[in-house]
Image 1: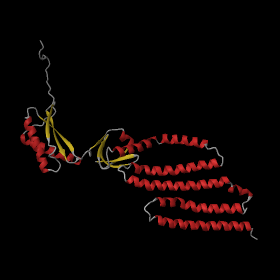
Image 2 (image 1 turned 60 degrees about the vertical axis):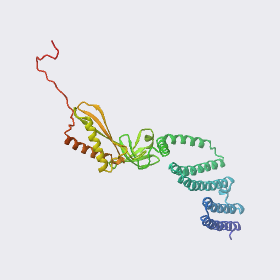
Image 3 (image 1 turned 45 degrees about the horizontal axis):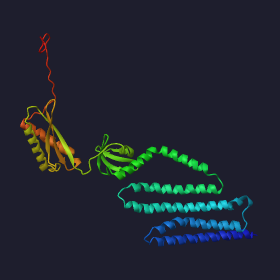
Image 4 (image 1 turned 180 degrees about the vertical axis):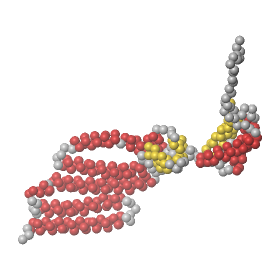
Length: 353
C-alpha cells in the first residue's frame, strides 16, 4: 500500500506543476497585451519574471512536498535546509535581475544611442550589457558563499588581482578601444574621407572599436590600431571641403623671359578651366617665380581642383599642355649641368706668378 505521505507529496508537486503551467500561459497572455502598449518597460518586466516565476512555483511546491509530508531520507535532509532554500532564491533573484538589466540596457540604450550623432554609445552598449550580467551573477555567487558561511575575502582579493591582470594583459586592447572613442568624439575623419597616415594614403572604410581600416588607391586594405592614429599626425583631404590646391612646378633655362612664362602658364590654366571639369576659376590660378636654381629658373603654378580625386588628372593635363606650349614657343627646359675646366700639365693656375 502506498504511503499517504508520498501520495500527498506527489499531489502537491503535481499541483505545483499545474500552477506553474497556468502561470506560464498567463505570462504569455500578458506579453501579448504588453506588445500593444507604448512603453517597453512592461515587456522587459514580463521577460525578466516569466521564466523565474515558473521555476519558483515548482521549487516551492517541491519544498512544501518534502518538508510537510516527511518523505525525505535522512541522507538527503541537507536539501531542505534554510541555506539551500536561500541559495535557490538568490539564484532566482540573480536570474531576474540579470535578464531585466540586459533587456533594459539593450532596449533603452539603443533608443538613446539612436538619438546621438556619435557611435561611441553604440560601441559601449554591448560592453555594458555583458558587464551588468556578469556583475550580477558574481554578486550572487558571493552571496551564496556567504550563506554557506564560506569566507569570501579571498575571492574578493582574487577578483581584484584578476582584474589588475586582465587590465595589464588588455592594455593594448583598452588603449585602442579608447582611441576609437576619441576618434568618434573628436572626428578627425569619418568613413569615406581620404587621409594620409605615415606612408599610407587612401579612403577610410570603417572605424571600429579596436582599429580603423583604410583602403589605399592600390585597392588594398590597411588596418591601423586606433591608439596609433590618436598619437600621430593625420592629414585629411576631405575636410573642411574636398577642394584641393594643385602645385605644378616648372623650370626654364636662364635667359628666359619670366613675365612671358607667367602669362603663358596662366593662359594654360584658363584653358583648363574652360575645357576640363577639374580646374576651378575661384580661387584663381597664380604663378610664382621662386628661385634661381643650379641649372635654371624655378617656379610653381598654383591652381585649385574641385575634388581631391582629380589631382592626378589636373597634373597630367597641365604638364602635357606646358610641354606642348614650351616646345611651340621655343622655351628651353634646362637639364642639370656641371661645368668642367681642364688644365694641361705645366699650365699655371690663374693668378700664379
